[in-house]
Image 1 (tube, rainbow, N blue to C red):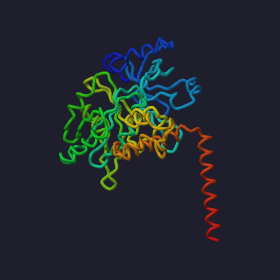
Image 2 (image 1 turned 45 degrees about the vertical axis):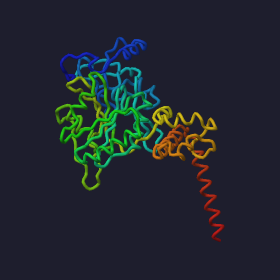
Image 3 (image 1 turned 60 degrees about the vertical axis):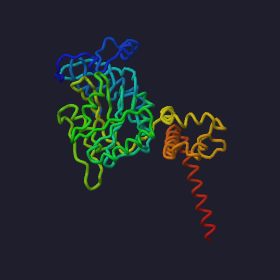
Image 4 (image 1 turned 30 degrees about the horizontal axis):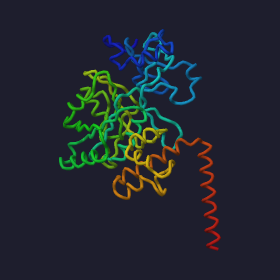
Length: 361
């Protein structure tokens, strides 16, 4: 049997006119609509107006899939046939309104974090995890996926009020128009503010490193200990990856939240537009550079470098922008282009070593 709950409407799960139009356009009206609320190995937990089901995609879908984005992800709306014994078949994925995705470290593949998200909560703990550059990376992911970012500074009970104000000022000086919510899962400070921020029928995804307290905050919002949590290691200062699978939860106030495994790296995946949006100050300056294809690294007449030299542009912001641009350009290269680049670099190293040998002899 499916996991039955009291009768709900699809809108309670985040369904909107956007998804209904897409459903009609793709001729999916004969199927039930369900939302993917958890993803396991080759199986998905979905929730419809009739309850929860364990579902698999059809063989046809698997045959036609050519990339990771062709498979369901947490947050997706899918067309299903509900079967007996709590099982279902997924026939199609309704086109996504928003998407959060990242690049696997040192791989070409894309990892979908979540879809159809309204707000991404970027969580950092104030005892050890605070990094403006990491915030910027998450902002790029959010902007590129048309998701609104917001910051949660967690574990505010672990630092002094003066230190807290200093961190807040750093954020305000570096970023514009980003909401900042201050919380502590231990003392429950800021939880009412966080709950008030979460609007019924909207979806919020918690992002951040392991151990910053994402699951603990969601437990507090749920008023349960549904999500298992562990303490941060006292010897390494690192969080433990307690959350191993993305999962969606539904709050009493009607808000929808997604818990996400901690990430040690935030790889930028095909996010050129997101970078330009987040670093809008540099994008504006680049419009007055001497060369249209200016890289803002060494060119004469570069407005960005001029602003940097005159301290009109923050050095850390500039360095992070250059780093993310290079990372994104590397990702956008095709595999043959990467192999050719690696081949040329290898030849350069070999030539240099041969020259050193000749010099030493």
